[in-house]
Length: 277
View 1 (cartoon, rainbow, N blue to C red):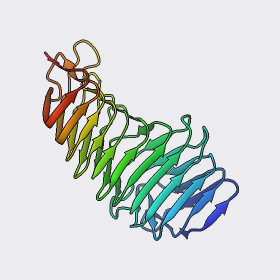
View 2 (cartoon, rainbow, N blue to C red):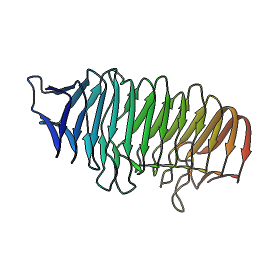
View 3 (cartoon, rainbow, N blue to C red):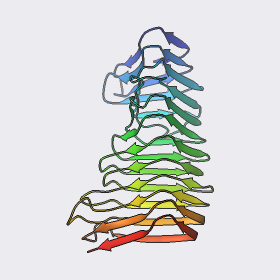
């Protein structure tokens, strides 16, 4: 299926039945708009989408579902679900074979949902200008090869790993409930709010900033008495401004529990606590 430049006053749904090789391939050549929502789906379990030009997918205060097995093409992709409690966005794997050029994801209501079900790889900037928390549907890695990653609201998961790699990174709270958190900048700063992985076996939190680093609380604690602490490792090429505390508290070694700081200078807003065993 090849399509683009389509506007619907109601719901726009694109479905491709299974092709001869068992892979549903949809090629997008231009913009798609469905005022009451946009859904791109496959007749089978595999949904393959290719971009052959810059594409904007727009709904007017309604859902956008793009739960792709793969979405490739060296072009810009912009997704906007509008404003309202129904402006949900669901994304799958993007850019695994050919990174898209840039990615913007926008939803302007805290009551809407943003679900990330796969890895996202982009050549330039990635901007999630969403007013709702992003929920991980599994382990997710977000990579910008030559740009910045910005996530406007909290990222949450349940024992899901969350990884971000980019030139520079701006994120707010990340809470993986036992999943590992990894943030790496290749040339710029990292700015984050609270980073939390608290569970019966807390995960590891690794932050590696090529330049300056700012975070809120960094917590890899066991969830209750007898639970294992996680490990925290923080590296910054320049100053580290800690706007809270670093904590790895638990009764067992867990995931190699401990705290490691390797920074040019650290300014501490609260404290550093490690209780292991």
